[in-house]
Image (cartoon, rainbow, N blue to C red):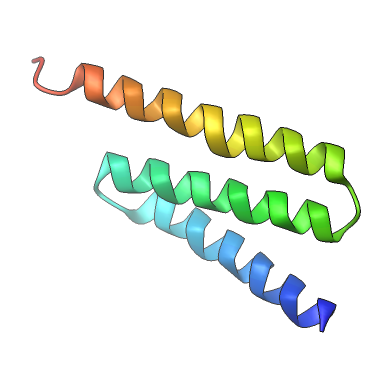
Length: 79
């Protein structure tokens, strides 16, 4: 059961990473990268590394995504 869950999470990380690179929308790419980071955090929890998972969830998935979305919002409409 754990093996199937790990395979699904790793597939989610790969798909989200590919989407982050391939999407034309900047907001979509940032959200996809944040989702990949969230999948990685869940993977770390399953691998019994809760300290790494908390760091990944808070910094990688949370703070980085918010900073990128804020930067995109502030730079829109200026040429």
